[in-house]
Length: 101
Image 1 (cartoon, rainbow, N blue to C red):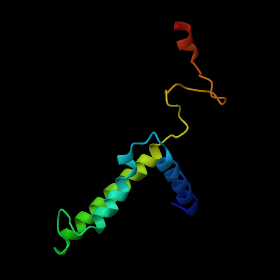
Image 2 (image 1 turned 60 degrees about the vertical axis):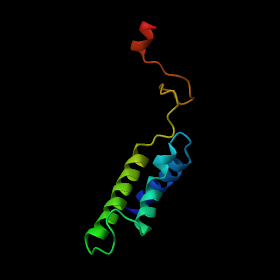
Image 3 (image 1 turned 90 degrees about the vertical axis):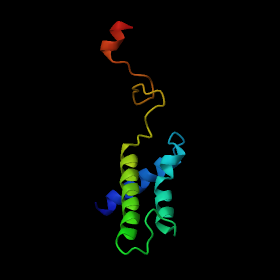
Image 4 (image 1 turned 135 degrees about the horizontal axis):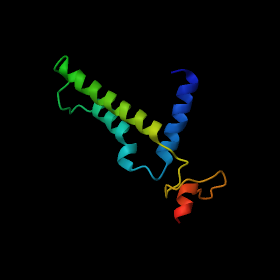
């Protein structure tokens, strides 16, 4: 990914975090992973040489994968009702559906 891609992803991430339709737990997934990484209380203690670090890295990578996927799937411009709309925001009903209405 180049610099422009990172900038675009950062912009999309900010929109994702500010969107009130996104549940709070989804927004906090990355933050909670970093807190887990920094916390002295882990599932596997850090003083165990390899396993202690692997669980922290696994948690961070899982949270990063989750957040990237969530931000990529996020569509802030979709209407709340899910109906297709034209450029002016009017409902656009397909011709096949219009015949049955």
